[in-house]
Image (cartoon, rainbow, N blue to C red; front, side, top):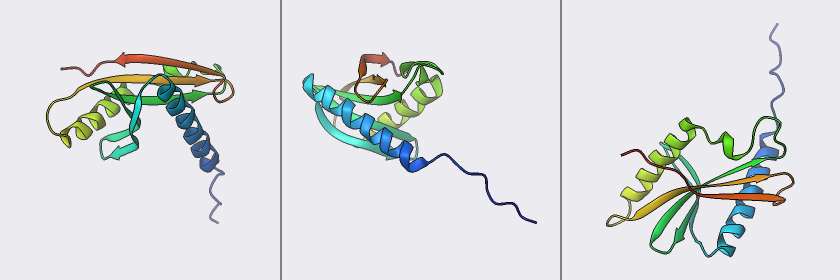
Amino acid sequence: MKLPPLPRADKSLAGATGKAAEQVARQYLESQGLLLRERNYRCRRGEIDLIMQAGNQVVFVEVRYRKSRRYGSAAESVTAAKQARIISAANHYLQRLPGELACRFDVVAISGNLGEQIDWIPDAFQAQT
């Protein structure tokens, strides 16, 4: 007798929350003077939530949302493995553009109700050369 699959977390709800968090982060960064270049850039190497422009610098932004700190802060959830995937995807993105551009990696950590607390961490991590 084959058992039915176990119920899975509602991915549509998580996806909607993620999109809402990205929208909050985008609006916040735009209010700080950054301009949107691209959303949800995907390639085989990984995904980048937001790609923004700050002056002559390309800013790759990871958006993290946590309703509570029960399992750590939103910013703490950007692990070394996640950083490596973001850096790899950013390299892929930059290869499509002419010339060499300055870039940095920021994290926008949102906690509580969406938009309740926004922590923007510019230059949160570095690409190892």
